[in-house]
Length: 449
Image 1: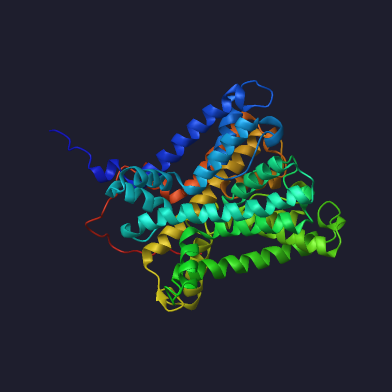
Image 2: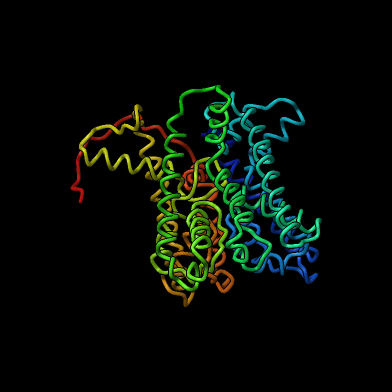
């Protein structure tokens, strides 16, 4: 008996195209970074270093195994900048834009692909979403680059060409939450410079909120809508609460630490504490030595990195909406309520399962990676756990990334890739089919707790 052909819906699933798109760009970036012209020394870069760096750039993570400015040539840094921009836009978003420019018309498959990446709510919105993503990204990056360029040129005496280059690179890296810097100490030399730190914070917060939220804020500002969607309300409230709590916790815990905030005056401590409290959520930049942080601060940073930023943005992690939804589910269960209500809306039950899948999938990946790294390396649990959570979410490091063996680096590559495309998206792409059970089984309740 002949087996039926696979349906187009199964072979062309948008989630699979998203994963395939990221994978294709990742391979291209790896090959380009392996070229001798990409390194400052003129020698070919090893495949594992090129693969790790390309993955970190495409997945806008920021972990590095070599000094970005010292190892990579201008060509190599240009490749990194391109990979960061492509990763931030989203592979399918760029594909949709190119299709719109060439044909002036988007096909259904391309629209579904772009929808899977941008998390837009309807196929009819995809064109405006794609164009809006590009325009908004460029506007924020240009404004941030102008401020940074002026600061580098006027205050630090950088030649205009060099100042523009530094401004553009760090603006793109900040908005796309990539965490790549052209300084060996990341932004530690600018820890107390508000004209450098605050524009970068503004850029990575805007990128980390998520494009749907930013679009709704703009529509609300123009008077096009007078009611916030539930997604926007959850994202803004949770993001703000975590930002405030993270900033207060980091500043308080590190206030007298001579290796971090303790060496600054009170204004420098407040600025640096604010930067370090915001960066783990999305960006991956650091203005103090992460390896000098107290254990309690590292633990808080782990939590912030795991949660990450907003959905459909440039940040990693499980996303603030997922975290908030599970908190409301717990609250409803404690109250004994059969349904979950947020504000004046009821959550559908499939949302619970999606949120739980994302969180448990992330926890499982991080646990597995941490266990493997503990076996393969001599580093302590806190350092290895921090590295694993960072690869999954943000991109900060205590300084052990470059000392990991090749196998350890490959483990982080998998974590970075999975953390960017999302556990649910990756699982959907790898699934053979979506099954609809046509019958139900008898109900039996096990003991919980």
